[in-house]
Structure formats: C-alpha cells, structure tokens
Image 1: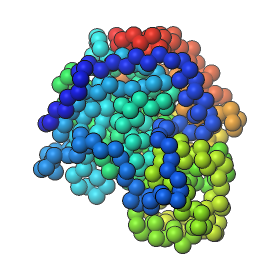
Image 2: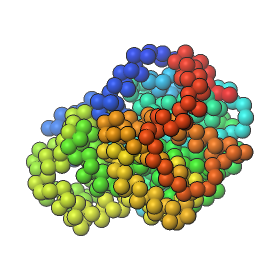
Image 3: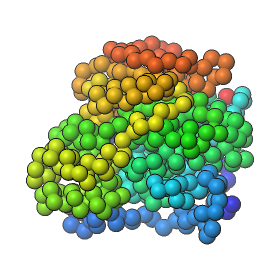
Image 4: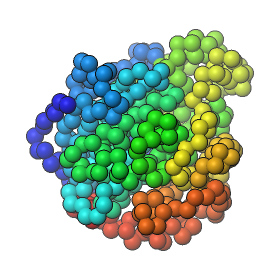
Length: 468
C-alpha cells in the first residue's frame, strides 16, 4: 500500500461563516435538487462529446499501481491524510483518502477512492456510516473526494454535510466514497454498489480508523443520486460482500426508474437533470449514443456535451424548466421505446434482487425527480421477496415537499431509524410497512432528534471537535 503525505497529518477544517451555509441552502432551493456544485461550465461550442468527457485535474493518487488487478476487492492501494473541507458545515475531524481495488460493471478489476472521516475523540463501540453523495456527474472534479478537498462553497450539500456531522458527533466513523470510481461513472449498472461495498471494506481495514474489521456495525445512507448508489449496494451486498456487517440502509428518493424520472422532471425547475442522466448513459454506451442521435435536435447535442463536462448544479441552473421536447424531434415516449434505448435504461433499474439488510425508504408523494409510483413498486418487489422495509411517504403538497426539500426534512426520521440500527440492544424489528405521513418534518422524529442535532450543529459552527 502506498502512503501519500501532505503537511499536517491531523487535518482540521475551521471555516465558520454562516453566510456560506445560507448561500448554499438558497442555491439548492434554486436548482431544485440536492447535488454537489462544480466548476464554471465551459461554453457549449467547445464542449466535447460526453462519451469522451474526462478533463479531471492531474492527481497521481487516483492512478492504481501496476499489478493491482491481482489484489482482492477492498484492498487499500494507497492512502493519504487530507484536509476535508465541508464549507457549509465546518468540521474538526481526522480525515484520509483511500484508493482501493473494486469491480467494474463487467466484473473486471477497477479502482475507486473514498474519503474517511473520524472523530478526534471517540468512546463506545466502533460504528461506520457510509454516506453516498448525490454528485451526479461524470467528471472527477465533481466527485466527493475532489469537492471535499478543494474548498468549494457547495460541497457537499447541506443534507449530506449535516448527516456526516451528526454521525461524527455520535462517535461514528464516516466513509464518503466516489461511487463512480476513478473513471467517474454515474448510473453505470452495479458499479456504484461495488464501489460502496469495497469502500467499506477498505475503511474497515484501515488501522488509523480503529474499526473492528468486518465485524463493525455498518449502515448505508444516501438521497437522490446517493440513494441510487445506496440501493445498488444494498442489493449487491448478499452476493458480493456478505461478510460485511451491514445493519441497515436508508434509501432517500432512490429514483428506481430513469425513464419515469425523465418524464416526471420534464418541464420542471430541475429539467436539466434529463441532460445529466442522458450524458452519463452516453458515456457508458456508444450504442445508446448512436440510437439517441437519430432523435436529437441540433441544439440538444451542445446541451448534452456541456452536461458531460459540468457538475450537475451547473447543468441544472443553466437549463431550468427545460422540456424533453426542447431536445427531441419526436415525443419522449417514442424515444424511450426505441429497443436500444429502452434496454440500456432498463439495465439501470433496481429491484431485481432483494437486500437482506433492513431498509428505511423515504420519498415525497409529490417528488418530481423520484416519482412515487415507481418507489411504491420498488418497495412492493422488495416486500414480496421478504425484505425488511420501513417505507415512509411524505404527503405534503407539491412545492412544499418536493425533491430537494424532502432531502432536508427526512433527516430526522432517517437518523431515528439509523440510531436503532446501530444499537445492537434496540434494533429495528423486521417489518414490511408503509406509512404515509403529513410531513416528515412533523412526524415526531425531529422533536426527538432536535436536541442532539442542535448540539452537533453548534459544535460544527464553533469548529469544536465532534465525537462522544
């Protein structure tokens, strides 16, 4: 294993501006999606085809060493201490990045990076929370590992930064993987599941974290794009990494059907997500790109090319309320019925395997990005396969409880459930239950969690050490 060194091996982050948090929250409300912000966009005229979009800053840490293919999944290939920059919620923590061996969509050796955060002080048993970020891009500079160390204003978004801070203040270790791996894949079948699971393996074997190896009680959480990675990991866990002691998974707005999401988000404030998703699939599949090209308007090619080289917030903010008809020469349903396009998108659906770990799934009834009917169907498939699911549906009206708002209001219920999952004396009972609540903000979880959340947030804003 290679160790990369930088000055100050016990990185701390002491940014304490409340204005940054307010600005970031406002930006998320504007874009209508919980995502990682990125670098300024290049003009559409000089944007490359998204299939070739790989303009990441040079960093040899991301280059796996020769012969890494012969190692086992989860093997640490290199490590380095970092200064984890979460400007929206400044943290005083120990942080490292781990390059590790994982697996690609075809079962071949692959590599990925995870950023691991550990409280400066910890008492009690070791716990590990894997937080999957909604980075939603095919560019390295948009990945969590880059965004968290570059000092960007909006990395990660408030809900994910809040989850990391809360977990750290509980004394848990946090792993935030790059689910796309070193080639920056997004929406590629199975890859995000493999990278998450092998990121956990790597973290549990990294001695400075002081974990108990595969015996460590571990949970997964992710919302939106992070929910996609979390659902892949939960489904692949029994077959790919059964030795991991994963005690629960929180799936927030997991977008189980990309075609349905495209229909639902078309014409909405987050309409630019269509370009994000299409660019990611084009990057994976030349056959998909060739099939889609027959239906694109000339201006659509520039929009998709730009989406291939931007971070998601840039694409969404530039394409507010864009409609699928603005990109296509024929109706969207006709494009989605094309045999090549249909098969490629269908390959990215989840629900074909039942997780064996208990799940907490939350989705707004009026979510414009993760349509409720498709999440209902996903839960039904899981339950039919005897999975344990606590499913919560937020019934507030549209615009009051949309995709981005639910990312924040659901944190209370998610952590109430995670607390039980991590506590071996009071685990979540096996169940398959659906509950529709007026609001996840008023369902009682927040009143229980608010004192601890307030304490964690105060420590963060004062740059005080987290942990119990």
